[in-house]
Image (cartoon, rainbow, N blue to C red; front, side):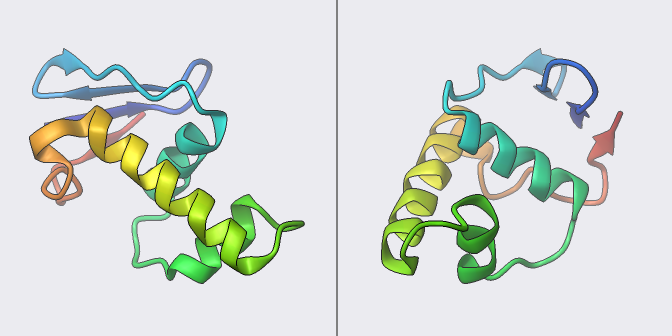
Length: 89
């Protein structure tokens, strides 16, 4: 089971264990956005929302970096944690 604590300090728990989140503020913001808006997001949309004052190619490179940080934090479960059993608090 996946649990997000979005109020106060951002916290993620998977199967009862806390996940150490990336230090990057943007990577944490990306995680919160994806948790709150559980739908498909285009990369251009996400890059534009997180880096609105940056050229699109630079914003997309920053998005790739933030996604890599999140995948690193989530480990092997990176692609399977977003199912209907995810619980948001």
